[in-house]
Amino acid sequence: MTVMADKVYQGQDQSRRRSFLKWTGVSAFVFLAGCATVVPRGAEAPPAATPTPSPVTAGLPDDQKHHRIALLVPLSGKNAGIGQSLANATTMALLDTKAENIRMTSYDTAKGVTAAAQSAIRDGNKLIIGPLLSDNVVATANIARPAGVPILSFSNDSGVAGNNVFILGHIPSQSIDRVVGYAKSKGMSRFAALVPNGVYGQRASSTMLRSVKDAGGTVVSIQTFNRDAKSLEAASRKLSQNGDFEAVLIADNGDMAIKAAPYIRKNASETAKILGTDLWNTSSNLAGAPSIRGAWFASVSDSLYKQYADKYRARYGTAPFRLSSLGYDSVLLTVKVARDWKVGSPFPINKLTDKGGFIGLDGVFRFKADGVSERALEVQEIRSGSFVVVDPAPKGF
Image (cartoon, rainbow, N blue to C red; front, side, top):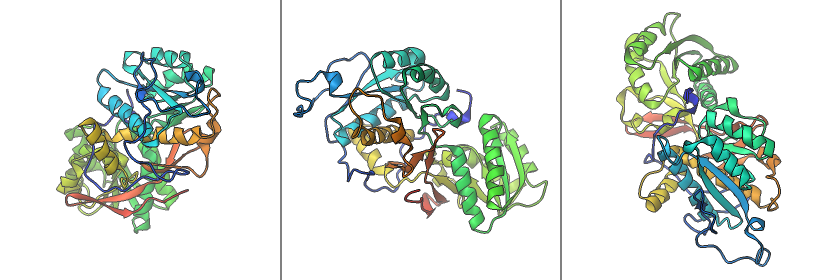
C-alpha cells in the first residue's frame, strides 16, 4: 500500500452522539435480529440457524434460494483486525435486516487476492464486497470484470473506481471541498495548507486549489512535509512567506494535526482557523489536544455510529474499527437492491447509481457515474473534550 488515500487507520470507536437507523425504502432495522450469516471460506454447509423456507423457495436447491455474495477482506496478516471488523459488521447487517435471501462467503485476501477473487468467481458469487486496499481492488477487478461481477470496494482511492468498480470509502477531496466552503461562508478568503509528500498530498493540493478557487478565495501558500517533526516545522515556517492567511488546512490524520498545530501558531499565524479532513474522524486524541481546539473538519455524520458500536461491542466483546461502518452499509445497500433482484441473475448494477442515493450508518451517499461515492458531510468543531456539529450534513441530494 503506497498511497495515503488508501491507508488503514487503526482508529476505533469514539464515545459520541448517535441515534437510530432508517434506510430508504425500509422503515427500521432491529439490531442483532435475524438469522443470516457470513460463511467462512471453505464452509459450504448451509448457514447456521437457517430460516424456515418460504413457500416460494421450499424444496429448491440452495443456489436457487440465495443470492451468492463474496466478501474479500484480510482475515490474517497485518490487516486482520480491520478485515475481521468489516466481516463482523457485514454479519451484523445481515442479522439486523433478516436477509434470508443472501448467502455471503468470506475470502481471505491476505493469503493471495488473486486466488481469493478467482475462488469467489468460481463459486458463483454475483457481487464482490471488498477488497480493502486499492492494489487489491485492481487485481480483483481484472478477474471480476470478464465475469460481469461488480465490486463494492472499501477503498477510498478514487483512481481505481469505474467500469463496474464502486468505491465505498470516504474520499478526502470531498471533505476538503466541504470544510473550505464552510470557512468561506464564515468570511475567510485567504487560505494556506500543509500537505504530506506523496500521492495523497498531491491530490490534496490539487483539491485545495480547486476548492478555494470555486469558493472565490485565494490560496496564499501550500507547503509539503515528510511527516516528521523537523520537516513539519520547516514547512510551517514557509506558510506565511507570501502574506497572511485566515485559514490553514492540515491535510493529514489527527495525530499529525496535533503535532503541526503548535508549529503553525509559533511560526506562521496565531489566529488562522485550522481546518482538517475526514481523516480526523478516526483519531481519539483530538478532543483532548489543546493545540487543536477551535479547528473545523468535515466528515460523515456520526449520528448513528455509537449505537452501532455499542451493539458491536456487546456482540463481539471489543470496539469496532471506525471503517467497519462501510461493511455494514455495503450490506444495507445490497439488501435494498436484492428486493428486485432475481436469484441467479446478474447483479443489477444500474440500481447502484440511483440519483436519490441511499442512507446508511455514515449518512446519505450515492454513487456517481465514475463509481466514486459522493457523501453528505457535516462540519465539526473541536472543543474542550468534545466535537460539536457546527454545520449539519444535508439530508439528501
